[in-house]
Length: 263
Image (tube, rainbow, N blue to C red; front, top):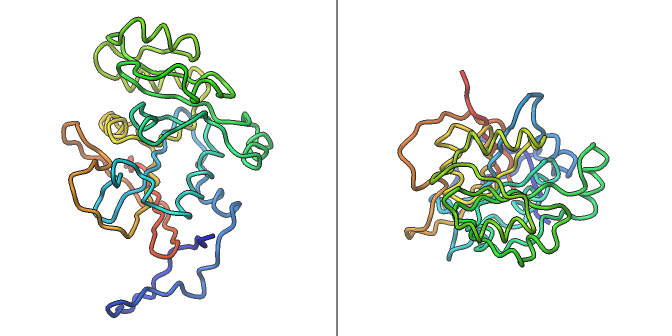
């Protein structure tokens, strides 16, 4: 297993082909250590945390999926972030492209959650403007609790009706996603600690609405080129300042955490 440490740099020049040494202070962090570092500060209301992995040059997919990016350490943090979340929020396109199944965590995570007053598994909320999800898929068939599907009034009535048999279908907008309405619905359900795992269109909408409280960004050392999607795309330009809240390292991978600057 790749060790995750605090990011330590010697500040000395590095020769070609040489790596920055970890340093004596870079002790490997346990799962409990990581959970402490990713714990939310005290606060009220809905808090949305985005978790993304990107290539060195900003791509969020390689060959259409994120799997080739990040590696073992990123997957470890990915699982630990789910431990803390009330709900995992996801775009329908990402659910299809990445082969998502029912939202279940492993036994150790389930036990940790219950010991901390949470349900054994986080709720699953999917966003699909056209309600274009298969009601017979594993996402719904093996769900420990009924997922939530956020969709639009313009989605075909028969699709919404089919999904209503297996999920809680909530309309949040006529022809475009109403982020404020989505956030209000999550708050009403008590799902205030939100982990968004993608994709870029949903992330863009959340950034555009200034609804992102924290970005957990795994920066892979791979540069991929091409014209694949980036973290945000498809919206008008916006400006949102974030503060660096933490930096961890696993060999050549950086695990960065940014919180929205409100000053």
